[in-house]
Length: 574
Image (tube, rainbow, N blue to C red; front, side, top):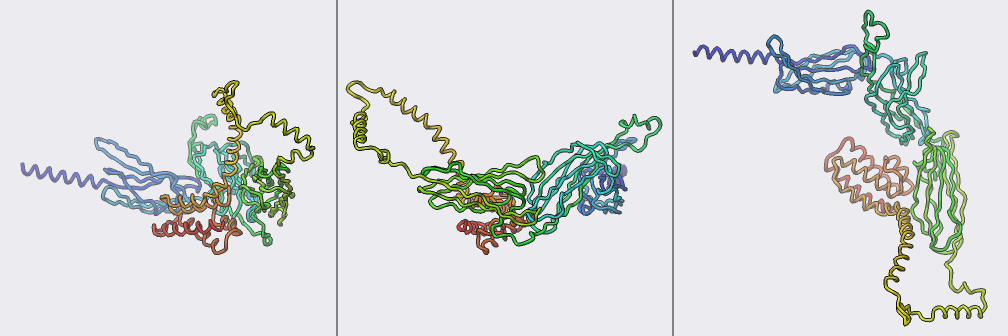
């Protein structure tokens, strides 16, 4: 009996050791020879494991891009009465280089044990380049490769294909140093025309078109557009009757292809000579016009000054020069609107500004011409245009005595008698000896007058609030910024940048708070002392840099204190 128990005990131990010995980990790929545009599957399988494997794949991510994964799968099989289980992790990868590449041995943890996978060699053929003939590629085409600062460059991304496909995912290009306007918004692939290249016909779909305006000088990079496509291709092996093209649709398979456009380099050069002092960054061809909605008003009556800026170029990205208005005239901050011509690739349109003016004294006022200096990249020189001067006549308020200036004394006496006949007592009587005026009648009269006047009063007050909205936001800019900067954020440096740029948008009547240090420097340069400007730009660059490499909490607190102090100092200057 004792002998039998010992035998069972050792049998259990031997079985356990046997089963543990059967746990193994392997790595494999579905193809060892691929082209650079093809994706492939990388799988790690743990046999007879009680837990799913875990692995760090960072050792090979320098050579391969992870498109998807890891996806997990568990399989259990019974063969001749014995059970086999497997747990797997699968990734879809894309090669970032061509040539002979290696997926190194990886450490895989299963439970409390570490297993090593086998290294795998991959041969990645260079294949068809995007500039050569291929059955599927993305073309990135700029209309010019060298531009001046602020000059538009239009980039079009088109998909060329010989095969039926569907686009699974698109990653649109990223830029640094450009102000971007979408001409054709990002959209799904629609093949609307065809084009022949070296005698081969392609279906062509325009994926994206963008107008980019450089904000700094130098060679600026535009990252590639990438796409993952599911392409239908015929199976390679078909025999017998099935070689007939009639049966092609029965032997189609879908392959996942990764494609990308070329990286573009745009050379941004400086202007041929030093810009004039009043140059605010306008690049293109422009015209300017001004007018008043009336040329004759009374004291304290509002009049609107309209400024119309039309042309082609970086509209909506620069400011017109400050207008010097006459004294004794109250001026409200302008409202602005921008309308773009949607049917042109070059940014073309008109920008309108409307100023509300209220003269406080009578007399003749003159509004000087508004000057705009711009750089014409086609003619490679600067031009200055001016609007026409405007005149405004402001009449004094009417005096009662002037109504009788040309009348004789007898006429005045007669008028006076008539007035005394109509009203000889200054006391308003609601009740008289002849009868009384009911209270409800009087109330009806008062309510009728109120209802008649209310819409006009409401519209006037509402219009005044709308016209002065930007002005009120400007007045509250510092208070809002100091309140916002105290709010908690998981990314304090990104939050600080947002608060700063939002403050300058409100304070300077800008249309957008999507600024960067260079744009901010160009805007603030004529408005602030050099030492204060350097501090602001330095803080903006620090915040932008730390958005991607955050510092310690102590550093964030110091930056917050410095920004608060700097905004208060700046607000006094602006």
